Length: 122
Image 1 (cartoon, one colour):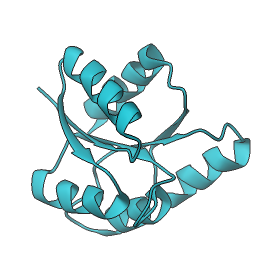
Image 2: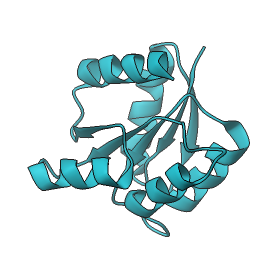
Image 3: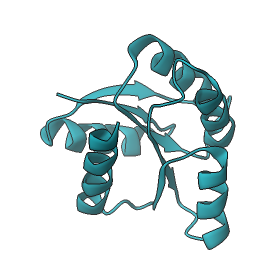
Image 4: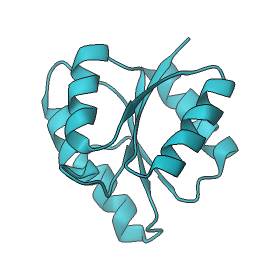
């Protein structure tokens, strides 16, 4: 069973997403901000990270750059999650080091396909 680290500061979004991921067969770790995400990723080495880009303490942009620069976490695939559906947001997320990008509200079936592809590649 693959492990997914979900970095999301909104309680409702985090609870709903983690429940759906667990029902889909994934083990889920949770982080409420970018700093917690980095700590969890270093300690737990998840198969994939779902990264909300707008979080307190440390946002997803900075957390992604730090994770990708770290030898111990650099190969973990990251999917950016954001409410901003602008082309520039997608390009910025990929430039920060994210492997893919999705918009909120999330189309869960599409997200599962992206997760499956990235976990297989890893």
